[in-house]
Length: 269
Ligand code: 2YC
Image 1 (cartoon, protein in one colour):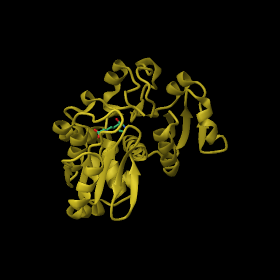
Image 2 (tube, protein in one colour):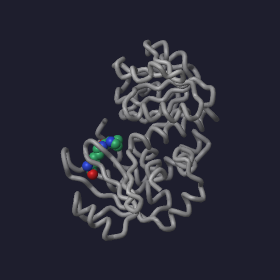
Image 3 (tube, rainbow, N blue to C red):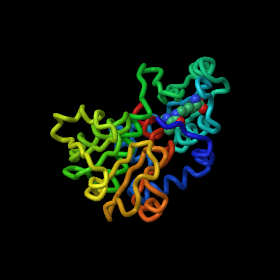
Image 4 (spheres, rainbow, N blue to C red):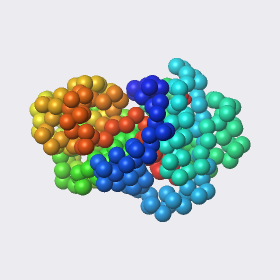
């Protein structure tokens, strides 16, 4: 899993409204609509919960330590969605204790290996990888105006790619998956809705709808892509070259944190 840097997210909070407008332009829907679709909850339920839920974000210093503005960025996404939220004064275990003392219903926290939101009252958690997968499939489905019966190329069969494949199957898409490590595709051998692609170049040219869930960068050039390519790219850093991004940007959804965190919130209610 790629570790964010402060520069990836330094102005996220101040830009969140612009990010949402950009999402509406590309997908026809705002973040709330996308995350309700991704999590299967109604807009009413999402709005109703915002009136009673308090959300804590706990900075975690373990491993490689804090990422500057990470906790604040997570909190700004949650706040933008209409939920009362706070970053705890304390970090780590003391931060978790503070969150519970301050009656948080949901606690967001990330170390180097996992980024989860814990639902205190109901005793379950949601993982960022699964939420990111569903949020990005939701964005792709809205850009495509529905994916039922459509071919979708998933790049990368890691946690996000696997999560995306299962949601795409739920939506009735015909999933094509490529991974540089072919052994990661073995799990799909007997799955009639998932076809494994062995040639990246061929697959990129062939399929219009792409979900890039790889941590690889700069491997998709403009000439590699289908002329009408529509790309949902949760993978950090972006797999498209700067040129490919610039020439397709109105049909590419990519962000370091926003859609994944917003979907975590909706899935944790
Ligand atoms: O500031 C803190 O609390 C740090 N412990 C946060 C570390 C997050 C590490 N994970 C990541 O950078 C990536 C993100 C893209 C989301 C999931 N993993």
